[in-house]
Image (cartoon, rainbow, N blue to C red; front, side, top):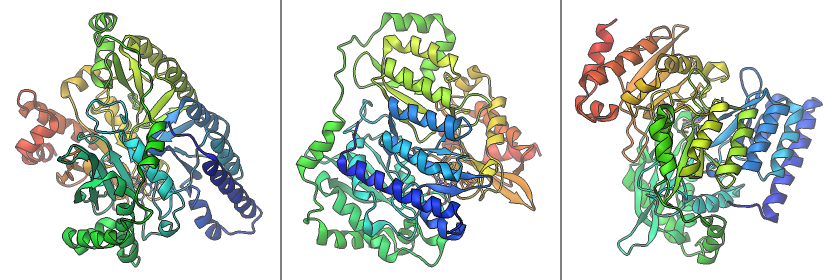
Length: 551
Ligand code: HEM
Ligand code: SF4
């Protein structure tokens, strides 16, 4: 993985000491909260319903075991013993005390981490496919380019005060696991006719109150032009994005109001002026960063492991875990193991300090000391030998980390909602917990099959509800929490925004409504048809009929 050079170390250390001074002035009353706000937001520090909240970046979702241990230590010493992994491959601490925050940032700097650009109207943490570098369907490892973008965007003077926040995601594979079509810029690695790798560039996707799927502005961008093309997009946005209205300030609105074709022409014009400047990426620089992500020396193994097959055959629980949580690795004899942070009845995305340490130890023991964080709020060990999977699973079980539900109904994305968030209309976490309890039976979940349920506590859509196969949105109806349900959303390469099924349900009824939707699917599905396939074939009507007939 990437290691900080002297420049990175100095930059982060200077930022911490600057923030230490700002916090001291706030604590001494020399700065009001109003004056302090823009300063803290440069360092990922929010003020929420009950306390400050610190958001720490996990660049493109990659953590060493050392970094994971540090995150555990911070949770234990400075917080209430847990942290929350988010959809943007960050970790959030919900209870830090203000005077402690500079110390936390110092501790993070020790392991090459920080909270810079995790809030504010700047380019946020660049996110990537959690299977980067190990997936069989990959064209190239997207972390190389995510790291190049991280360096380019960190404290970029021209793009530190954009009209609004800016999110970039990249996937190296045709199967999109990074939701690139709902980001301000999405990059998809593709090959041109000559077989050279490059990027398809998508712009103007996003969720929030005006959800939109990104438009392709360029089918193929050669690697050397990555930064100049990004600059061209951001320049057009920086100049023309609406600063008069916060709700219309994201680039998706600019693309929509200008028209994708005209917007693309403006970007191409801007690009023509800067493409052959020093922004062009020299091959030597790409090679330098690539070296940090060079594949490790894998053992030569037989892809078949008789021990593994025997354990699978002999232990139904292990077999279910393998079916849901284990994905194919590009190297024979290895596997990708997903660690679910969605235990039945738990808070989606939360991990305790003990669990984080356990994962760090297991990464050292079984997976070359590296951990990934997925945008679906789970963890991943990318390089596990198949023959070690049974031992790994047994160890995970002792830490309540072996729930066999990846991609199934209880593997929900959920935002913090009214339990923490000052913008919320309704609670998200208790709804997630109730639905998860209702579908606790794993055999039933496996029978239902792939079903992505996503919950947000308000229209800002942090919980990705617009792109859930089933989406749940908390709304306020005359002071009472209600939940609007959408169906048919999708975040992968065939991304789609879900459609509202009808009037919202009360908190008491929403779990029953989800069950009715699932039962309807089970009744009408054709052989081998997933929930989304069935929805796409049958449309909203059968679900609507059953849902509202029952009321
Ligand atoms: C509790 C503190 C949080 C606050 C105050 C907050 C605020 C917001 C706001 C205002 C938006 C809408 C932005 C827009 O449409 O222009 C938004 C979007 C979003 N947030 Fe949060 N958020 C919080 C926590 C989270 C968490 C915990 C996650 C991940 C689980 C998250 C991930 C996202 C994502 C993915 C989006 C939508 C994507 C997009 O920007 O279009 N946020 N957030
Ligand atoms: S969706 Fe709304 S309630 Fe949920 S975290 Fe985002 S801003 Fe808060």
